[in-house]
Image (cartoon, rainbow, N blue to C red; front, side):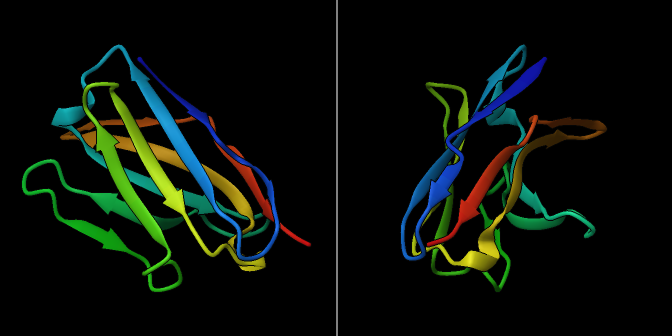
Length: 115
């Protein structure tokens, strides 16, 4: 069972990045999905999540209107589209899939927003 993250990197303020996590060993469309981020010295914070049961989504106030969470069931992948990036979005981003007491994390991908 694995979530393999990709898509991080260095981008200028105002730019965009697309993060993806490919799930293997389980079927993603039965799971709640989410993205979290963490900077050194701070706790991991929730960025966005999506419910499997009703498709409802949540975004933190800091990313609302700029980030979009989605899933591609055909590719067993969860995606975070990040637009209009700001320096304060710099962090390691982690994907997550949860169902009952099953909880899987990706390995993290670094996003750096800097000019």
